[in-house]
Image: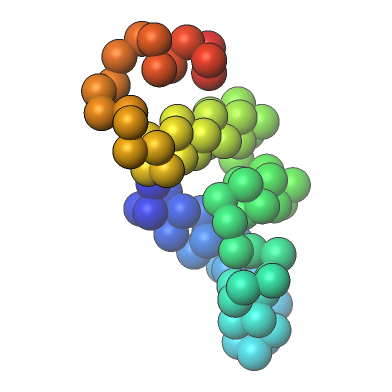
Length: 85
């Protein structure tokens, strides 16, 4: 996920006005470009991706969080994923 997040971030930054200080603040905690959801939606609004890509990235983020934040989930099986499908 980190690679996708970084790729989206780089694509967005390429489309922004060259203002390193403001860009850095938007990438810092509390900024608009902190999480994958916001980055994905902004990329879509800038015409950098399709709505399908945004929805897929958000779904992947939810699945990732399910595994990353729940120590009881140890296996990648259908019962864990049913909630997302």
